[in-house]
Length: 272
Image: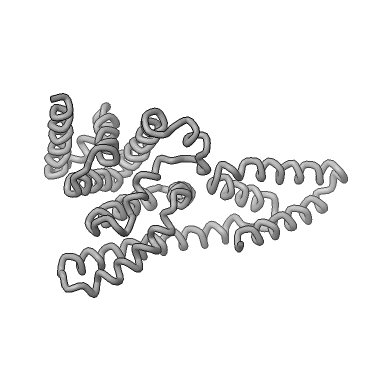
């Protein structure tokens, strides 16, 4: 009886959201309310813990995507915080203590989302998920915000999943089913758009910040910290080396040469 009541409550919440979206200015009015975060959190938790029905899952994910597309009303922040809430719930209720300690990425908030890009899942599910990933990765107002989100997604394996989906989507385009072919085209387009947008921001970021100086080194170190919690020890070691080198001679020119050596070292690690 309790499970049925919870299911009914969840369906009511989702229907309310759909009603909001169908009204003119409905989403904007909702996002302006003081308690908007709670229902967004509930939607996110339902999607990635309870929604066994594919149609229900896709509906919720599409609603979250719609929220992300209203950054001026903080819809993007609401959805990010809903994934924070989901991660906290997973750590408290799903992951064992050993699993939580062994996590090698700085966050698990997008782990469940990325897992739904598995090519064994229905195309419509992956299409909805890729739409939300696109919204999360591109709704940030600044390049740094977008790169931070993409770095988290990369930690969760999104780049490998996108590569697999590109191959799968190409095969779907050649199927006899019109619906599968259409979904394949849409999925392929989203995967390519994600990859292109990521590359564009990375190129601009590298041109602006990856200089052979101390600021360039700090930017590279920041990128390392985004990639893995295990990078923390290596980063502390690098910073200690910089300080020790400066303390030896108190000569900025020597320090600059040392920084260039570190950057060359980082380039070598990145290419491997």
